[in-house]
Image (cartoon, rainbow, N blue to C red; front, top):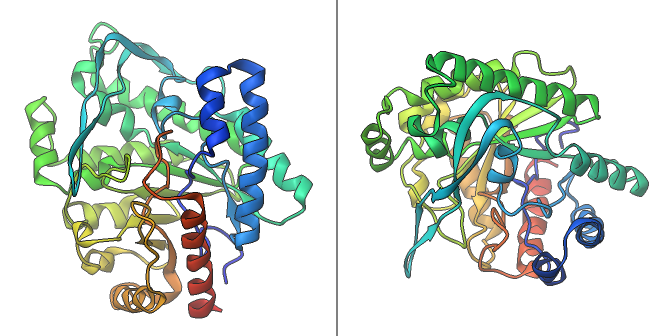
Length: 370
């Protein structure tokens, strides 16, 4: 088993919000809400430890969504008062829409203070009190998501007449976030990035082209900007990225394997590991993993978070064997394909089913890697 992240048995980050927390979010604010959140986080940290995981998150319990809560806290970015983003998701029953407030880049992008600093220190201290040896993990959206969600129309040309300055400021703000979170003791940071998976879908690239982006080369720009944000990461910090095709109320937004972005993504993105969605045929085959260089870890998201049905351990082992034809088995780990609750609504399964899946991942990893 590995002693540094990503671990052989790992998970993406978000967990189902308990009913008491959902009720509290509807009626409480400020310190009263935070007390409920604190207790819920203590309990979910305990459950992660008892399941046998070597890392733990706060389940993203203080957030409404995995990315917008972070993005709106960057200096220079705000919500558009009269406009919403519409993201269409699909499931077996039909389509549903996620419609967060649109974002606007109204001033120079900057980091006024480290985002989620208090959230991380609470998680860090909770684990320290338990004396568990479990590593606290913080998840944040990658810089790509600021652009992917808004596009050129979200950037005020009076603020950024030269778009290169936008990219430079964005990466600089993220670099400062990485530095300051590292100073708080964070050794496991994850950049969540749906854009790099979405861009494998021709329909998504067509949508970007229609708004004026160079869709065929957008992934190269995103890779450069993430690398710039990570150029001065603290020593001893592991940074991974998680890529999926959308996760909202057990639905998805995009389709397609990793083939379109694979060569540049795996060979150029300067992260330590890749969390990859691989829970069904929408994710394509393992062939793109041939571009993963030695030393980089691949966390196979073979266990779905979109339903409560428990996967077969034998099937998981067989699929890991298939992946090992393209990247060395020692570079592989196992996880769910995404979070269980990327937004406050959560996916369509129970908390017991969620932890049964995490326990299955731990057991399977132990049997494969020892």
